[in-house]
Image 1 (cartoon, helix red, strand yellow):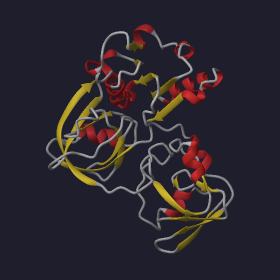
Image 2 (cartoon, helix red, strand yellow; image 1 turned 135 degrees about the vertical axis):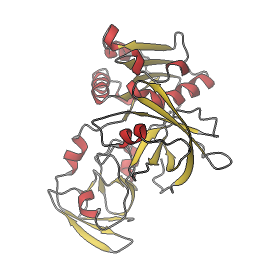
Image 3 (cartoon, rainbow, N blue to C red; image 1 turned 45 degrees about the vertical axis):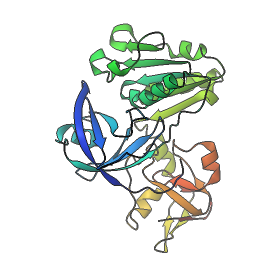
Image 4 (cartoon, rainbow, N blue to C red; image 1 turned 120 degrees about the vertical axis):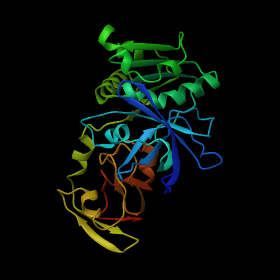
Length: 318
């Protein structure tokens, strides 16, 4: 991840396909040539016809840049994006996308354990393709409530590397045993419901394996926004306009600046990366779940939806 701004560009929706109950995939193609290259774990920002911007993991083969594939779980109680994708006739229409961007990179490792819950299978597909291509030992545990709701089952290799767990039939997987069974040189990648991610995070912490765990959230637990809404007051300068504003002790940075600059947001809870902004001066206080420790320490960028400032003044490239 670079923190550099990327421009949106147009693609055409070539295909929409029902992959499982409540899951639809879209294939996006360029006007000509090839699409930008990406690494496993990458996602796209897609601007829907309504203007909503949402993020979806790329689950097409990274080596085939003639198209991108994303998959969308219908969430009736969500924020409207998934309902729009499922209800809108998008095939043949042009949409704007930005990226790919990668906050969940597949790091080199002698072996991997992939744990996917529900729609969390999407970033794992490209990771499995890469692991198989490089002949890296791996195990994939794919968990779903019902078999009919588990997308892309036919795209997964069968055999000793893949275990499909249907919780309505066999119960939830024993994550503690899974973690206990990995070697010290195994990286553990997990993506899925918040409850599953919290559980595996706690298990890894107790087992002394936190350094081996890599997580990606698809939903908010609300904690980051709560942490970012209170703290010491500070000034923020929007460098492009010269506007200087005060962020009060009971205010969030985003709520103060959004009426004074053009900034794109989506999750507003620090897990999607849409609002990543370059920091020109000052020391940001991070509450996101995207930046790693090195990126946080550099202070070069921040997620303004949940960020604050450790310094009295923060200057942003806005």
